[in-house]
Length: 232
Ligand code: HEM
Image 1 (cartoon, rainbow, N blue to C red):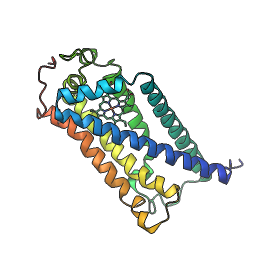
Image 2 (image 1 turned 30 degrees about the vertical axis):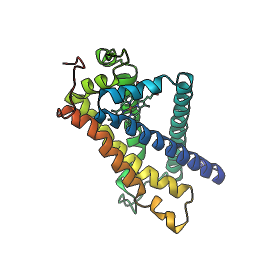
Image 3 (image 1 turned 135 degrees about the vertical axis):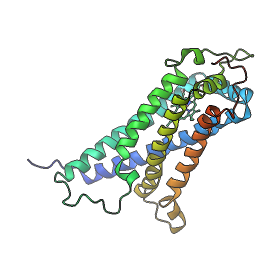
Image 4 (image 1 turned 90 degrees about the vertical axis):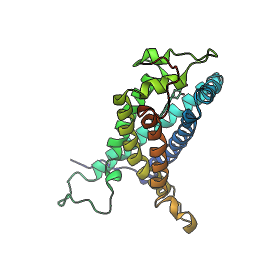
């Protein structure tokens, strides 16, 4: 059977788009983590922050649309590149021993799919209130949605916290390889910027792992109090 071929230019542009959309999504993950870490400053801070976002109104929907477009484009490019790579090598290697590749690099599609499944669950949990409608319905003393209460009530349940931590570990693998590889694809060549291709992805991914895991773990262990959020 003739091998499907890919035009070189198309391959390069798909990888470039995948790199740019991936870096855009990384930016969202960092901003989202910084916003969420306000849970350590208490109910007032986190709920005020959430209310500010909700009050953006139509602008919030434009931002959500942009985020969705980044995500769909990133996944479409990833599937395309994976299919090309498979088609280019229909015969498996004689030696299955991977050469100069990392575990994170070889499992990008799998970690990406599991992180996607996590995001779907996460939206059902905290944004849409489908999995825990009682948490989502909480309102604070000022009549604002009690996002602090919903987060604390959710993470007080160990199975939910463990699911989040597992997802964050997979996100770490995905980002640590993805960020370095994106800068490689974008042709960062200046010696002073070499760190972007080596180590930067792992460092950023590690900070995100620590920041995102600190929230469920601090709540599940009782470090962050519920403070009358009505759960349990
Ligand atoms: C422990 C870690 C996390 C916490 C505590 C958290 C918390 C939240 C909360 C409270 C909301 C709902 C905000 C609201 O309705 O006002 C939310 C929405 C969301 N989260 Fe997270 N999140 C975490 C990790 C993540 C990660 C790792 C991702 C992506 C990989 C993510 C993606 C999203 C998305 C896409 C939304 C919807 C944003 C929107 O409604 O416009 N979250 N998160």
